[in-house]
Length: 162
Image 1 (cartoon, rainbow, N blue to C red):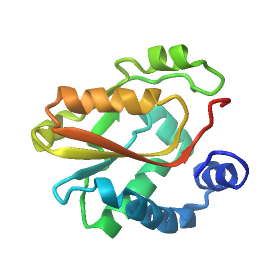
Image 2 (tube, one colour):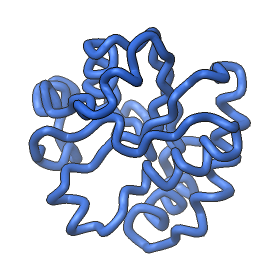
Image 3 (cartoon, one colour):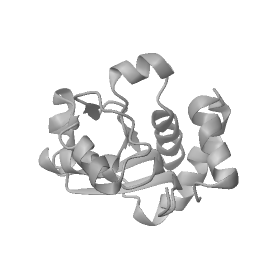
Image 4 (tube, rainbow, N blue to C red):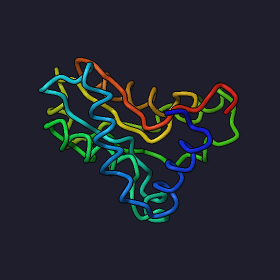
């Protein structure tokens, strides 16, 4: 969906309004939307939050979506396949180049799961894609660890004016 009007309300309710009940139907919807790109051996992984942001927020909305999508699609779910190796400032209000520069080397695969990723397809799940900087950083981390391919699915896509 577009990250505007009702799409924005839904994402913000999940992200900041403690509306975890949104995750189940949204995860089912994402699984249906991703059907053409799903591979039965794919690993589903959420875009991670840095541990400091996780403490503040108490949950990762992308992990809620990814868990539901994986369950609906019958795929392996690995909530900590990738990690934020350093805290980054909020990307809100930053331009395209600054977003990508901020996210450079901020995400890596978890050392415990590096052998699990080699030669496999990964489906990255996030709530919103604006510039693609976070998804790009996660993609690079997975590819550097030997993933065969990366696909992404997001609940909402921000327009060019975001």
